[in-house]
Amino acid sequence: MKKRIVALMAVFTMAVGLLGGCGNKNADTNTTSAQSETETDQEAADKVAALIDAIYVQERTDKTDEQCAAAKEAWDKLTDAQKALVEGENADPDYFGRDTGDASKDDPLNEDGIGENELLVVSFGTSFNDSRAADIGGIEKALQTAYPDWSVRRAFTAQIIINHVEARDDEVIDNMDQALDRAVANGVKNLVVQPTHLMHGAEYDEMVEAIDGYKDKFESVAIAEPMLGEVGDDATVINDDKKAVAQAITDEACKIAGYDSMEAAAEDGTAFVFMGHGTSHTANVTYDQMQTQMNDLGFTNAFIGTVEGEPEDTECQAVIAKVKDAGFKKVVLRPLMVVAGDHANNDMAGDDDDSWKSQFNASGAFDSVDCQIAGLGRIEAVEDLYVEHTKAAIDSLGASDEAATDDADAEAADDTKDEAAADDTQTEEAADDTAEADAE
Image 1: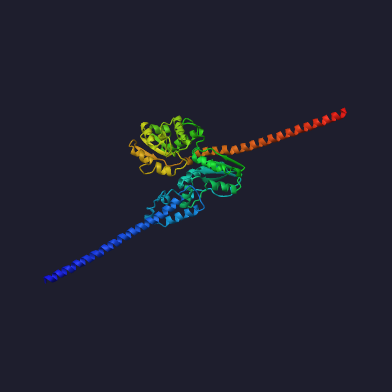
Image 2: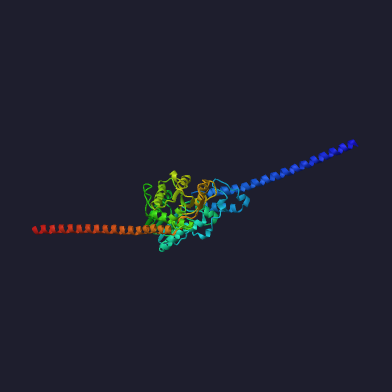
C-alpha cells in the first residue's frame, strides 16, 4: 500500500511539472508575440518618420511631390498607437497629427492668367493653416484690393514649409523659382515684389538674389521695402515704419487685453512682451531699434525679446529680469512676427518647460502670464503699411520709365544737335568753296 501511495505521488508530481511546463511555454509564446507586435508597430512608425525626414528639406527635387504623397499615405495607414511612436530627426506625431486649422480657407494664389502686371508677395511661410490664411492671406488680400490692376501671386521661401503643407493638406504653394518661372511663362512684363519679411535680414537677401537671376526676363522689376523699412546703423536709429508697427501692435494688444491704452495697462501693473524671432544677421539690431521706438513712444511697459540670435539681453531670462525689475506683476506675451506659427504656438505659448510662458510662470515673479497668439499680418494698420510700401515700388517703375524716356529724349536731342552741327559745317564748307570760286 505504501509503495502504491508513493507511486501515485510521483505520478501527481510529474503531472504538475508537465502542466507547469506547458504554462511557461504559453507565457513565453504570448510574450514573444507581444514583443513581435511592438517591433512591428515601431517599424511601421519608423518608416513614416523616415519619409517625413526625407521631405523636411530646403531643396525641391523632381521627386518632392511623389515623396510628399508617399509620406501622407503611409501616415494614414498607421493605427493611433503607431502614430504615437513616430519619431525621427525632425519627424514627430504633430507633423501630420496636429490640428492647425482649415487649410481650405487659404488661397495659395498659384493660378496662371496673370497678365502683364504681377504683384508677387513673398513670405517665409507657415504650416499653421489658420495663421497662413489670416496673416499672410490678410496682407495679400489688402494688396489685391488696393491694386486691382495688378495680379497678386504668392511665393514662400521655406521649402520645408511648402512640403509640409503639401504633404498634410494637399495644398501646393510656389517657391521663389516656381513663382518666377510662372511669371515668365505668363508673359508678365512688370513685376513688383512685396516681401512680408520683418526686416532686411538673411531671408530678404536670399529673395533679392533669386530675383536678380530673373531681372532680364521682365521689362521692369521693383522690390518693395519689408515691414520695418531700412535697418539703420545702431539701436538708436528708428523710422516711420517702426513707429507705425509699434503703435499698431500695442494698440491691438491693449484691445485684446481689455485696456484703452498702454498707459492704462501700465497703471494696472501689466507689461506686454513682444517676442521676435532673432537672427545672426546684422539686421538683428532691428529688435533693439524697436525697443528704442517703444521707449520713444513712452511705453514703459513694452519689452522686446527674441527666440534666437544676439544680443543676449533679448533672450527670455533677460527679458524676465527687465519686467520684474520694472515692477510689473501681470504679463501678456505676444509674437513680434508676421505669422503666429510654430514659434508663437510652441516657443512662446507652449507647455514645455523651455517655452516663454513656462519660464515666466516658473520665475514666480508674476501674478499672471497670458498669451495672445496672433501674427502682425492680420492687423489692418500693418496691412496698410505694406500697401504703402507697394505703392512706392509701383511708383518707382513709373519713375524708371520717365527716366528712360528722358534719357531717350536727351539722346535724341544730342543727335539733333550733332546733325545740326554737321549741317552747319557742310554749309560753311560750301560757302568757302563758293567764295574761292568767286575769287578765281
